[in-house]
Length: 194
Image (cartoon, rainbow, N blue to C red; front, side, top):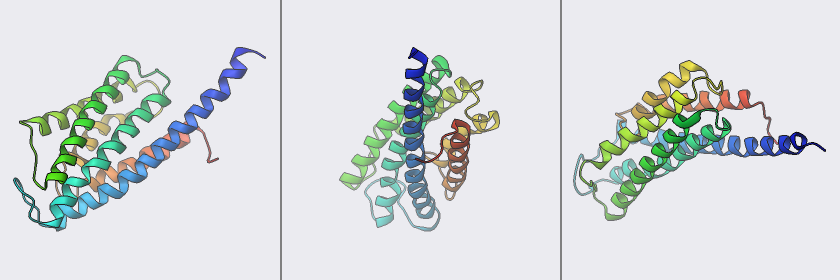
């Protein structure tokens, strides 16, 4: 038995695991992004300070699962490329992960204390870093073929405007984009359900 015969099934199994993680994370993201869009469009929320409405908790709290799912999606896309996205992909994945962890903690603390918690300019800085991380991953992925180039070009902008810089119904655009990402990655990886 040659080494390539033994290694090939392991890569396929790993790819299947990463693909399942991406699909599950997209499903989680879709649910919470739709709640985010609904609350941001139709409900009254405060702009600063102590929470007054139930919608304040929903509007802030959905950022926690959106952050965690975002980490998983970007990590899964990076891992499915088996290093072909190079240093840009690796650095982008790390920057995105660290930025989303900070946003997750900040939003979680806000929900726990019932007030908008801002640690200086951290929210816009880390939202911009999440954008930068996705942009670096997209740039590193340009030649890998996992996602079409047009998707890589709009991914960072759609991610930012549909998540942490969202206004009203813009998370719905990110939802649609993530559905297309999930379908494209599934088709390109070539793995069927098990």
